[in-house]
Length: 131
Image 1 (spheres, helix red, strand yellow):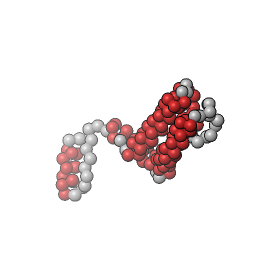
Image 2 (cartoon, rainbow, N blue to C red; image 1 turned 90 degrees about the vertical axis):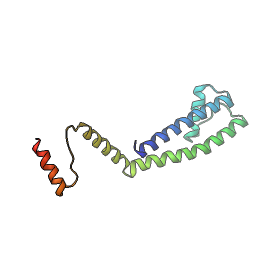
Image 3 (tube, rainbow, N blue to C red; image 1 turned 135 degrees about the vertical axis):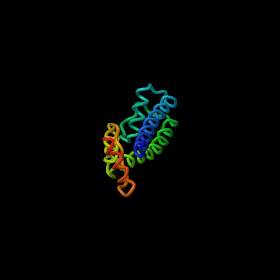
Image 4 (cartoon, rainbow, N blue to C red; image 1 turned 30 degrees about the horizontal axis):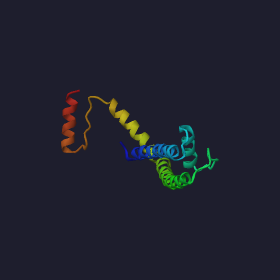
């Protein structure tokens, strides 16, 4: 698997893990219902700044501060992965590799001769005799 695909998968897993841990944090610390906790995790991760579901306790505020700081790093990583994928030609490379792999998988009963010197020309002569 190409490195860029591994990085995208890792970034996606980080995003999902962050939302999951954030929601669990709000469930455990603030006793929120799962949907409210997920909502809080999403608005905190995205730094949208909507109003909280309920007023946060001091522990909830500390958790939110830590959650925001950690997520800024995760967000920066995700942006760098996606921007390198889109703007540095990685997307084109991935599509090119997919097309080449698909074309190669269709090939059957063929031989590739690398070099057409003395030995390569002899090999080609022998191969052409079998056709």
